[in-house]
Amino acid sequence: MSKDVPTRERSVRERGTFAKHGDDPTLASYLSSLFFILSVPSFIVLTYAGHWYGLYSYGAIIPVFAGLLVGSIALVFAIMHVLTR
Image (cartoon, rainbow, N blue to C red; front, side, top):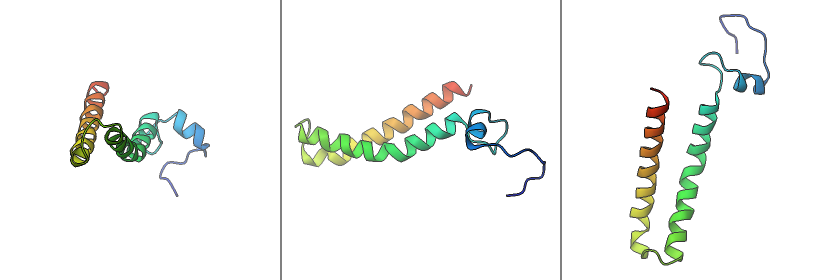
């Protein structure tokens, strides 16, 4: 992909470690992607594990999953709010 400003080509590690502008990935973007990919499957496993251990009935699986999802989104929002002030 061509760029308006000529710069030297950098390796993937260098782009992620020494991000200087919006085109470069950062640690925060990697963590955000990891959370996005892993959160829903892990919440599903946690929800069914709680049911299998007898913490709640079968009918409570969906509300527990929804609570985990909403709670995690609120937690991530709060962390991002604090860190970007």
